[in-house]
Length: 492
Image (cartoon, rainbow, N blue to C red; front, top):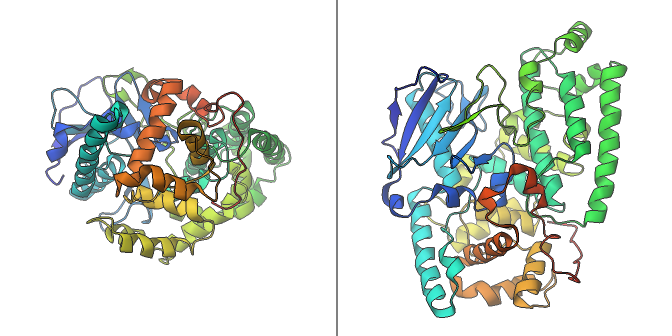
């Protein structure tokens, strides 16, 4: 990956951009960008965007503003650049990464961008070795048991560009319906955009109104739910009322000063004069984002997928430093996070203060996922507030540990519906080991390939589904008529 090239050719009609070429190496023989991206519900969560027409994946990626900063998810200050990733026919052994809004990138910034792409698509040597070993195992199983769908799974499971984003999104996946998970992820990206505006001296009242409208219209979309639809609808009604009340306080009574105090950011506080001027001239760069399903910049489609307007603010997933100083009640109401808000804030604070060294944590298992390493990390993660068995296993799966299956009520439903198991949340780990143990150490990959296959059997190819339908990819829509509704566990 270190042989990254920079292409200086730019078409006159396109806005300024730089193109990086990432060699695929040994992965070039079998790599499929569509399968690598559209392999987990995380690809549907903001700020990710998959374009099925151009077969292009796009999202903002974060860079530090100083070459001396080594970790873009912790360093400060930071900036985000919008990138689109494609695998063009004329580059069969490389990925093309177009970086918008700049004419040049320092070697350090190129390295940072490439590392994040490599992480998302699992292109490291270890990832490629795991994918090859799993495919061999899948081919043998398919020949014996006619599991043709197993060989169609590429052995790569999409993840976020940073471990922090994975950790927060795993929290969002726990104990809630998939549409709300999507909505919370989108709200966090919108908040990040608002915080950018505030740091530059402007706070966006319009963004609050747009967010309330989005929540009430339920335009969110995501994959694996963990609470009953009845409970979730009641929560949504309450959240919508809270959001409306919050917005009315901000816009009608001018109590934004209190909300600003709650933000507790490092930037200078906003005065009443600034608030009054916002009503007449709010941050259009930010507010224009808030009607978007994917938090991607407004754009037209082309052979490069999304092309953003560099004059507009980019909504990225917030960094630990951006979340660490927020007030719990503000974050909970603004993003409809509920009890998750304090857990996310504490996680962000632990990372910023160095109590959870993300880089060291990931580098510790970079050369392979051993059982001893898994157990050590699992013990550490369980000390984090809100990290129960499901969330811990999910985060560790994102880190490359595939021998443990993160099991929840969706796993129970799948085993009942597909394998006729009388599973419960208490017995599900025993049942998954019985079914998928023969695929060790890739039990999760076999389980996920099967689950993904049945979702596509029901809904069609998930990579071709419009973003507006992501919210329909729920377990309740997978259940057969007369299927059992399973009780949810309180702890993830």
